[in-house]
Image 1 (cartoon, helix red, strand yellow):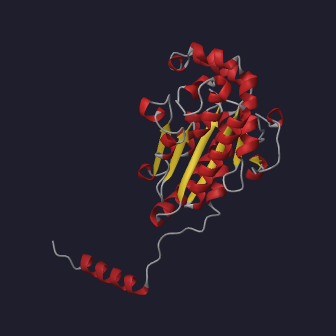
Image 2 (cartoon, one colour):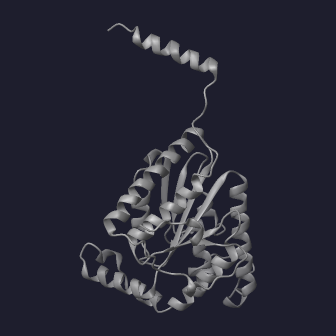
Image 3 (cartoon, one colour):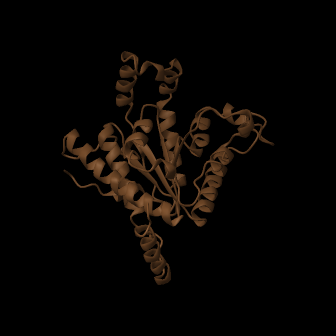
Length: 295
């Protein structure tokens, strides 16, 4: 099987990319069974590192997953993090903002769900929705009732550049305070999205996921790709870089994502807390107490 180098999927800071030049499919020269077997190995390694992070109580680990509808976000979360102790990870799926969330800045609801130190948190859709969907539907910005933004004319290129800066400031704050930021863009082709929509329509167990609005959004595919390109080019930084994941083949995408996550985490200087010699002596006393217990 072809070796995966996570650096091949890095969106390098300050190096402009063209989204249509990023592959949506990646050939690992292996069958599905072999790819899934490799995924099981990698996710067990991730789980072992998560146990150390949980025991050490640091750092916090954030994984943000972004992509077009049907890109495979839900199944990726299920398969990649399957072996992690549930007490050490939380997954949040962000839907339409509530009235309370609209009364605050757009990052507020995401900020509340950032990980504690020692914990993993996965965001299924992220704070980037407000420079993606809102970029295509700027009326969503008006619904936020931002002082000084009174009409669509106020939502200029300057407004979006300001949001990119705000997002980078937010992510810098997180990383400087002990959070590892892992951002994954699941890069799906338009043709594969079509196939997955058809599968949703055909299968009774998938029909609940399909909505007529999905087709309306699909018609604006090129606009979404331009918005994603701007996001990748403006918000991939040295402290919180983006990685793209070719998403046309789900097993391959899951393995690539897992490899990226593991590669980042294995570089952390983290281990189980070390006991002092005095503490180790006490453990021997505890052991003897247990052995000397009488029924």
